[in-house]
Image (cartoon, rainbow, N blue to C red; front, side):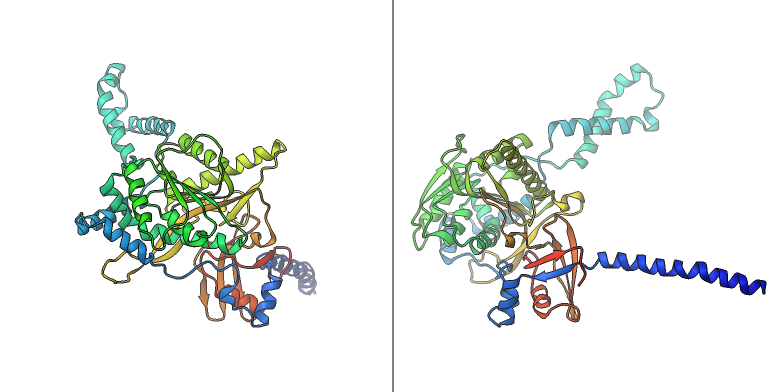
Length: 461
């Protein structure tokens, strides 16, 4: 009797606890399954068989790009007086060096690291219990050891001096990659903003003229003037010589300068800095240049760097700085507005920079430069940010961006995206649980595309 009474009491206490735990676990699961709704217009077009999911508006250019024939011919003519094999080899070495570059170390960071390393060395048994006179004697030895450790911790940095030979090496080592990267970025601007008709272009760090090649390809009817800035006169001469061999001829006028004008006028419809900020000597110089470029921007500012940890640091720094300038201008009741047009669907802090092992980078496909009609496919990583000035976000500008390769499996796909809330999120799409149009849009999307969906965290579908 005593046993039965205790057992009944235990059941009365234990059963509600089980139900409570089940209820709690259900709530947790609901939070992990947000409701995802496909854009209404795209949904209608797909269901009416007027649009294929792989061609929805958020898809970025995917074709493997080859340099136009006129550029290959121009390159050949510039190499006639030089040993081609040597320049190709130097181009490969230069490309590898540029992809390994880190931002130059700041003086105050170096000094603090020097003190930190020296203090850690002084804690070694060899240097303990020393008198004041002993410390003076070991200073040279201590300094040498500190420098040796610092060299391993701090990446070496030195500005690259581009003469004619190194300019030709860059042309072969980076020409095809830079063209493919810029083509993909400009293609998105052209696709999303069909009314944009730039008349003027400012290209900072213009190099061999890749930005001019791409912008002329998209907007040759409207583009009237190009201002190209590069500190190397030899690079300016090479860029101008290549463009003079263009077929068909450029209809716009190009001006080549070694230094960026200080004044904020005239403004340019589109301002571009491609693979240039990482070569500036310090943070102050970078921010001064970025500030000047933003003041000279009429509509779009495009900043591009190598898809490395160092490149992402530079782009992240520029993104934060421009946001600060926009916020300051708005706090002064200024009409100056602006937002991140691409790749971010938000203006919050970048969630990627919270983790040192992460970087916001994308890939493009291209054919390596070849003079014997052999097409060798390659991929190149890059990081970038595009700001749109004096405009506000439209509904489509909030579409999440796919920031990692899409995982496609049998009857389900996984997309890792950056959302309009400024968060990284993993979205699961299954054939059984999701609408057919939504499922195939996700399944046919790729790294770098935008998903035409709205995410509601408070609902489950």
